[in-house]
Length: 422
Ligand SMILES: *Cc1c(COP(=O)(O)O)cnc(C)c1O
Ligand SMILES: [Zn+2]
Image (cartoon, rainbow, N blue to C red; front, side, top):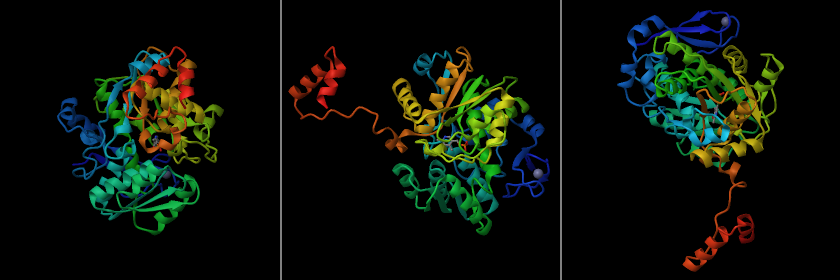
């Protein structure tokens, strides 16, 4: 049973039947899935959702599948954590972390979009799935394709972190590393997509893929007791998730799962790749592409496909955006780890660093429910932090050795003792 009416062009409103296409034939605008909200309203309820398994398919009426979900049966439903200690550090009373760093099975928000895209790919009859990726997407596509028994080709820029590469190749896809950055990868993939009859999750299946991002917001609202937060901060790469958070909040109201609530949405980018923030600050929705230069490789997209809609959504919701330098990103990673015990990658460090700025600027007030989306996992990007953490102290397996070290570490001038030991 499906509640999908079809696809609609976001620019000229032309309707299309549900099929694996992503641009309007008339105006080249992007296509989006439309639903029969009245029928969903009479079919869905909080109780029905609560009775379902803890995965992203619990909101299936608002997802574009016809039959039963094919993959992602353990994806989504990640923790929403009340972040008391980080909140104190940032001066925010009601702070939450939506922790997609522990998404199943590949530890980033991409497990959501890929679960939906590959379920649709199977329904459309594809036998090969593919993607253009900055790393996390390739990991998710490779893993979910393996689980579904599909052929898989993933395309990544060269120079990615070791764990992001092995985190794809271990699942047995063909991994193609392109000499260049993500924007070069993406350009090649649209040519490959024209020639090969594959399901490119973020190209020809993009309308379905991007719907999966809504589940991040659905879960936040359910986990807050069916309340929409006042502020939410999320990183922007290609621009998929940010507009879909807004769409998700609106849909929950439209189908009667929440009565009211408005959420301001904020974009976080790295200073070394912040085309959306630059446009936002210039007051234009025209994105000028940039050449990425940042440690935040997973969000290093210089020409974001949906950048225009990110700016529009920020303006419509009354949010804002900021960028963070590599140094601020590393501080953000350390701050999250040392206050909440969560190890995120540079994209998450960006989300923390930007939240800190927005609070300092007074854009996010200190007394309203605020969610930081943590979209990726730090174990994949060890290289980024290897140089900024304290090295282990190496001693013999001897109690006297440890006593000496302990006394040194706990001398009044601790810094000196630590320095001396190195
Ligand atoms: C892909 C990604 C994002 C956001 O990407 P969008 O394309 O803007 O949806 C954020 N964080 C991480 C870790 C990612 O991998
Ligand atoms: Zn159109």
